[in-house]
Amino acid sequence: MTDCSPTPVPRPVAASPLIVSAVLVAAAFAALFASAIASLVTDWDSDDYSHGFLIVPLAAYFAWERRGELTAAVQRPSTFGLLAVMASVALHIAGVLGSETFLSRIAMIGALAGAIVFVAGWAHLRALSFPVLFLLLAVPIPKLVFYEIAFPLQLLASRFGEAVLVAARVPVLREGNVLVLATTSLEVADACSGIRSLMSLLAVGIVYAYFTETRAGLRLLLVASTVPIAIVTNGLRIAGTGLAAAWVGPEAADHLFHTFSGWLVFVCAVALLVGVHRAATLVRRAEGRRGCPVAEPT
Image (cartoon, rainbow, N blue to C red):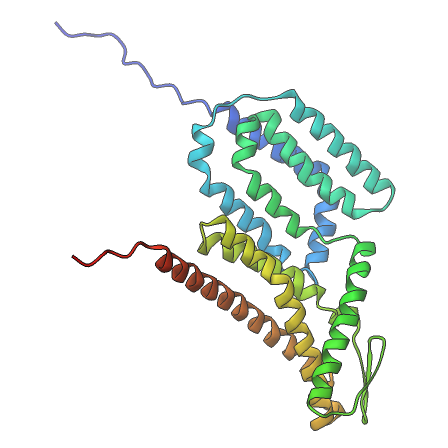
């Protein structure tokens, strides 16, 4: 006997409530912080923070790497996340009213962290803590802090350059952040302070340590080493410009040489970072060999 009962039509699988919530939160986030995102992209389109264009894709990749941990985590939304979002929105409004873009940009990251807690829970925020904190590198520091850091770096770079020029027997007189040579004067301006290369090298150091090391101690060492490396290489850049101006002529210190030396110095800084990693690895291996017990001869 033939079964004439209708064949059940499979129902479409409903999207996960977590995915739907994430999409809605992302849409609301983009609408709320549209002006802050636009101004941030404008700042990235400059020599000081051009690395910002790479921060967001890298943070997304770091989050994607944790998809297994996120899937295994228990979803326990917390109303504390909603409070964090509300506080971040208030901070954003204060930044807009006070024309302080830094507050609005920090508020974006705070709202993102709060939304994760509100939609998924604390376990998901712990899993995404590194990608979320990594986004801070995309936020330019406030102008007040920038100049507070830049001026001491200017003086440090000019002193370093003066020392190298004196060692090379080049007559030089330093007046603050100005190096007076026989044929020209070199001013170590804000752009030459090294803070630009410091911020970029810090981002590179964190990414390099993340991909090449699993030991927390060596990761911290690599990230911390970016600061002295950036300071030393920028000082060498100033000294090299002074030597070129003294030995070749003032035209050697013009914009073209200055721009080229900036790229060259950054490449050298990355090479030094790799060198620090290799040296630290060799030291750890040597210490490990010395710590291994030696078998007694039988």
